[in-house]
Length: 329
Image (cartoon, rainbow, N blue to C red; front, side):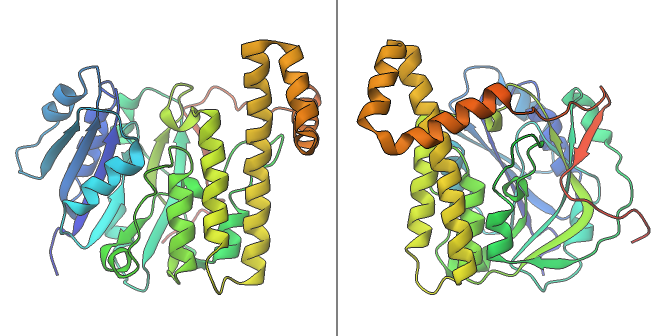
């Protein structure tokens, strides 16, 4: 087996301030055979910052788009350009915790394997030496129904969808089923790929040990999206629902997720119309589309009256995605 079997893919747009730390955290891992950075038409110094993080090992490659294509297309291009057997996605403002792949690659009873994520709110330059407590691995396998249900956010709680997971993916499985990121999606592209992988029978292993640090920033790409992005994500659910032989429980959760996203779209679309043309235009839209009114009214009431997620104290570590149990491995 290749001693450096992991291809790390970083799609980035205007990430000059963080890309160097992300790259350094990947290159220090001995299992990493190459780091492919796809610069998605950045207009800042992203390319210069990326190259400054090169360690001279010949493992860093940079691909640049002249036009913005989105993270899904950027990742697909990188996947196609690498022969390595394992693919690992790293966002441009995140880091790998030291030793991540030594832990994950110890066994091979999986097609995708993901670990815990720590969300941190401090400057990315400090993340390179991120320390996390020792969680017991508690290995288990994630099913399609559980995964989809785990991507439906609940009002009043901090976001913690399982689509945030950043699994290592076995290339042979992706190739066998022709799986790639949907280039039309700029929101939920990870959720969509993992869902289709599970629908194809992927063994999705989950462990509680923490190997991924995610920077929480109000201006991060994952926190911003357009109204049409929600519409496309709901359409992606519809495409998955058209697949044959889905378990009944999975179909139920997929429909729930589709309604959840569709209702968000209807509310955002109503608010966009109001912002562009005023309350009269928004009211006319509601009258023309009465079936959308429940989602609009419920969404507005929730925003006005609902409880917002409680803010954590201003500490460096915000939270962990998975509730792990502390203890020795």
